[in-house]
Length: 204
Image (cartoon, rainbow, N blue to C red):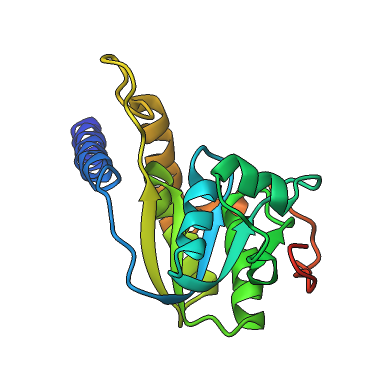
């Protein structure tokens, strides 16, 4: 019996390591968006995500943009200034989602927004290491929407800079596995119990 247990643990560890190698390789790849989609969603919470999403919208890559998980006091003009994008002509096309406080919440919020705006194709913007888990959550709430991942990859500024780091990658890979298995639903809920109310006003 102990030998079987050791063999099982060894196999599980080997499988985890093999999967982790794939995860690190896959999340380090860049991707080009399609010529045009119905919408873009940026899962906020990391550097470069809002900036990239606003630039994609301003360049005509999509009709609408959801910035999911925006802090309560942040306004579109401020975000546009930080991104170097003039948002004056974009306010009617951008929704500031203030419901989500987690990746699971991003999925719920994006699902409500996509249904409201009849989105059938969607560019997904988030960090490269976060993309697999983000797509897993979004596919639950958007089963009929075609998703196009456009990751924000780490910019290496120093010789010793190796991106997000193995610890963060390992944590995210583990969360991804828990999401695929359905165990992530047992995580503490960080959003209100009520369904998200999507703002109807421009840049709201």
